[in-house]
Image 1 (spheres, one colour):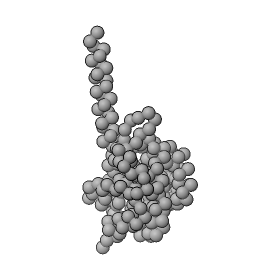
Image 2 (tube, helix red, strand yellow):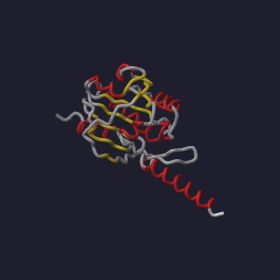
Image 3 (cartoon, rainbow, N blue to C red):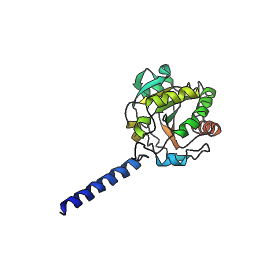
Image 4 (cartoon, rainbow, N blue to C red):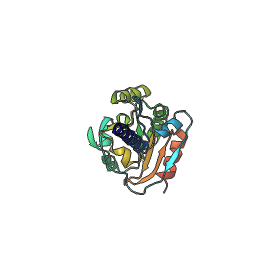
Amino acid sequence: MSKKPRGKRGKDARTRSRRRRLWGLGVAVGAGAVIGLTVLAVQGMHPALRHGTPSGSSGGDFRIVAYQGDAVLGGKETEFGRVFDLGKPVVLNFWAGACASCNAEMPSFQKVATEYAGKVTVVGVDVGPFTGLGTHEDAVKLYTQLGIHYPLAYAVDASPLQLYGIEGMPTTVFLTASGQVVDRVTGVFTEDQLRSEIQQKLLTS
């Protein structure tokens, strides 16, 4: 009679432990939805930016499949690291098709990407299927509706979540032309904030 309750408590404990590990990546298991803790803080239009500690080293490479911008990304199915072949610093934005905060900031990314064309490469990588924030179809619908035309791709697996310390959506990583991470920011960027971050972190002499 006593073994069954103990087994249930053990199972409950394992479930709680698994949920805590997932929250460490900024996600939580829930009925059909996975939402980052930081996501809850940045769903509005006003920015709530949280800077990560720059690592001073490369975040790591991972496989992507391009939605658009194959020439910049180095092919339709390729490694993210190929973008550094262009010899320019990179703004790497992790987003998702059903992320309201991503929807809010992507037009600003488009304006800044156009303004800094030839100086900085802006790349958006969809990780929606691994955060519970939308499918690839949702992603295509979002960037099409918003008129986004800077390079976009989706990650083929969840490895970039750990490689780049993703704690919420959206997350933006700033990398030098040699692939060194100089800052990682979780939150919604306004156009002015993104421009300032690029000037201070990527284009300083």
